[in-house]
Image 1 (cartoon, helix red, strand yellow):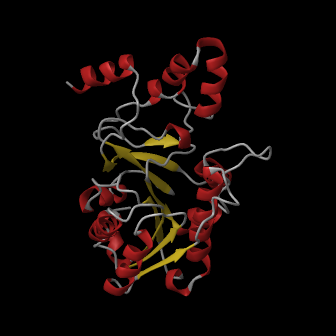
Image 2 (cartoon, rainbow, N blue to C red):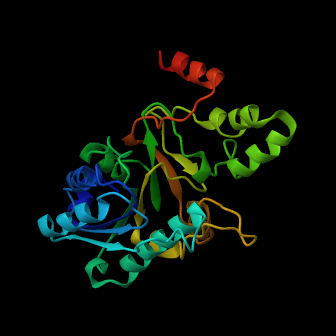
Length: 278
């Protein structure tokens, strides 16, 4: 692949949103600029459970951008109290839109994004870096300045091979909640230098991922609950189905989506990260 190849391609941009009225317009405009090299683009956003002016802002975007559509699913939380169940439901609506709507019938790529303001560093050059890497990828997932944070979605040999939340709960039985969180989650939030080669993974996300249309189609569906009804990251099942069909997924170190997401970092790991950054 090369960067010039996208000028003849079309891209679908899909995302989910809740209570992001203060950032949604800026997020959409930023994505439009980042994908300006594509022949055409269509945007589709699914909203649910907002208590602010998100729906109003989305309606305004439909008037200013003819390629933009959204759907509000209203209040899902009364019948879907678990967060990952709601997110998977909304992402599956995006999935169906891409595969079934005439607006997206000729899309060559699908960009999946979280629209909550955390993707405030994505730009044209960072996005186009996906077409400059020497790999025949099916999906490129985002990196972040200051450390890759999305351990919940991550599955990668020698880095994170398990559900970090399950690992944290199990470790807490031995060491207590603080040490458990440090071991299962914080210690895995590593800084990925932008000069490193793409990292092959079984799953990742980081707030943004771009897929070939075939790979996205082969994901089949997002699942936010285990068969036992426990919460699980919806990206993991989606990517597992892709991998079973032979698709290759990478974290692209140059695909910077934003800065470090603020978490209640434990003192040891926060100090260690600061020393690395200096």
